[in-house]
Image 1 (tube, helix red, strand yellow):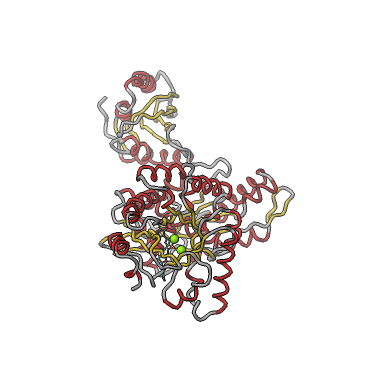
Image 2: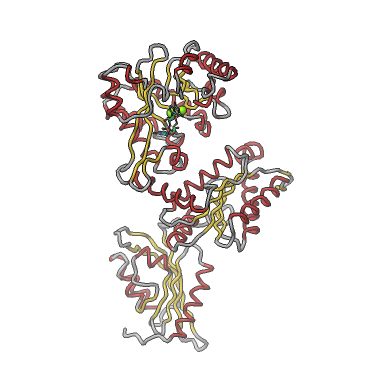
Length: 562
Ligand code: C2E
Ligand code: MG
Ligand code: MG
């Protein structure tokens, strides 16, 4: 069909109709054709998903036909012909459409013909639902869900549009569910969603995220204004809300991240937002935590750095390497093991210590992959050490998010087997953050690993809240006392007593004790009499590359003390 050129005013009308349809078409993709010119506008998502030439197209029916599975084409062509020839006033069909990457997706296409006052067909409009695409709406609250959040976030990043992203959530929803039942929990979520929407309108988009969390994205409000808004919302919920006959005071937590740098991906942004939220929940009793509370330039650079580090995981771990810090026997001061410590290095950022990126990335879905690489690399290196120090134990740090995975023990076990490593030479260190996990799950993981000979240590003992509860309930082989407890041990009698008590306590539960952060001969002398099994610290050695550690192992202990 040769098309007559469409005039500008007809395009304007097409656009305004199209845009009004789009507003009501959440999750489905709109197309609209001015039949007089066979000129159409199709939704951007369809154009992008299926690789169509443009949002505006002459002969869109024919173009679209080329994207339909060959077996379904005839039926589609018949349907479109019937519409354009006036035999039918609409269609409702399913067919398979093909994406440029070759994947076939099932679509439902519904459309109707709109006629003018004389009954002449004017527009053919409708919507295509891509069944492979996940819904962007949360059924409980009616808000956009996590998929909607990511779709919008990607859009902000693509368009380099500054936006402030907040995440707020209900503390203790699990307990509320347990005490009052799920229905009450759900009503609170609905109330919260509704309340947010009412109070955020015009200030940004509102989203229901995982579990008890909600997010907002705002382009118009400053960080300070959003912080104020959070305090208002928090005060409202703290005062108590009415759900059925109940009056419940609800505590909230929240994190905020200003997005000003666009050399990042959505997952890095989400990981950092999540981190800010977790900090609010775990350490700040619900006070708003702003990602990189520092200078304006800082959060931009931090985010970009984290993005680069995260991306390196998918680029064959380029830039990651391990250093090893010796662990010595407390009595003989001979090398008995080492702790593997992760570093990242590239030209732009130099050497980046783990504290800078691990806390942000440990909830990232990519992190367990990095964890596996650390484990494999550490065992490969440790095998060389065992030749010189037969009882050598390599300590590998774990993040709680690795242990959360259903296949965690299998991953460890496969890595051990593939490395041809004896499990008794491996000690996995977990921190008190593991209390974020389900205790039964954690115990099962520990019991099954220990049954195979792997040791488990509790790292940074004393820095968290429920350390004593943890060592009472979980079977640790070693307790590592955090260096903050020994820093002043030479001057401070109280600190000495505390470390002594910790050592006794660990002994009561059958665990060995390792003290970290030994920096001086004086510290070591004091600790000699406390029934401690091993020591670690700069006094013996800083973390070193594997080559240096091997040299130490070959030449005995003398070179350990520098
Ligand atoms: P950590 O496991 O408690 O590791 C000990 C940290 O204390 C290391 O810092 C080490 O360099 C430092 N250190 C050791 N002796 C002394 C001393 O005498 N004085 C002082 N001031 N510091 C000492 P690093 O390597 O920066 O690691 C920091 C934390 O990052 C680690 O604490 C651990 O929680 C985490 N981390 C490191 N590597 C990994 C890893 O491969 N996986 C995971 N999940 N976390 C890791
Ligand atoms: Mg450690
Ligand atoms: Mg430690």
